[in-house]
Length: 320
Image 1: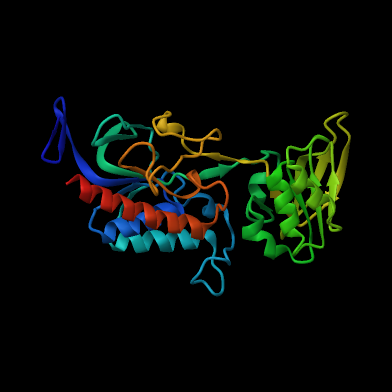
Image 2: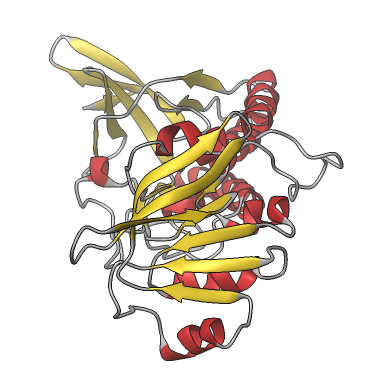
C-alpha cells in the first residue's frame, strides 16, 4: 500500500522517488539535468557501462559546443558532471527488471527494490557487431557503426561497409563524400535493401559490391586498422582486402529486454511513443536510441532526453 511517499512491502519500506532514469548516454544525462533542475531529485541507474555507445567513439565533431571536437568518453563525463552538479544521483548499475502494473513503479537493481512515480527509459540500442577476431581492439580505431559520426575521418581513404540492407547502402553512399573508394561486403548475393537504395549505391562510381564475402579477421598495426581477411562462405577460400576504415551496418538491437513486454514496442523492439515522449504506460517516458531508429545521433538523443524530462515534470504536476 502506498502511504505518504513510502511503499510498504511486508516489513520493508522503499521510498518512492519522483523520477528514476534507466540508462545514461546523451538522452539519459540530459533528462537527468532537466529533471534535477526541476527539483525532481532524479535517481539514475546508468548501467555498468555508463555513457552508452559514445564510450566506444574516439572523436565527436558534430555535437554543438565543441569546436575542436571531443572524445566520446570525455563528452559523457562532461554531461554526467553537469547533471550531477544540479542534483542527479547516479548509480553505475544495471536494472534487472521492472513492475509497471501499478504506481509507484517497481525497479529492481542487484536484488534491491526501488520505487518511482515516473520513469524515463534511455537504455539505447546497441549496434550488432560481427564478433570476429581483432574487432574489439579496433572499435573506435578504424571500425565503426556510424558513418555519419565517423565518415569524415576517412577522407581519401579506402573503406568497407559490411551489410546488405538499406542501412548498408545508405552508409556506403554517404561515405563516398569522403572516401576514395567504398567496398560493400555481403555474405550473399541477395540484398535486403530496397531497390531504390540498391540502385543508388550500384550507380555510384566510387562503390564496389563484393558478394559471397564475409569478414574472418581484422588486420591492424600500431596506427589502427589496415584491412581484413575475407572468406567465401561457400568454399572457405580467403583473400585480403586493404582498408583503413570499416563500417558495420548489420543492424541495431534496442535494449528493452528488462521491460518484459510491459511497454509497447514495434516489430523490431523499439519503444513506441503515444503522447509526446510518453509510452503506452502513463508515467513511463522514453528517449534516445531506444525509441529512435532513424537518426541515432547524440544531439537528437539529448534533445529527446530534454523533452522526456519536461513531459515527466508536467505529468507529475497533473497527478497532484
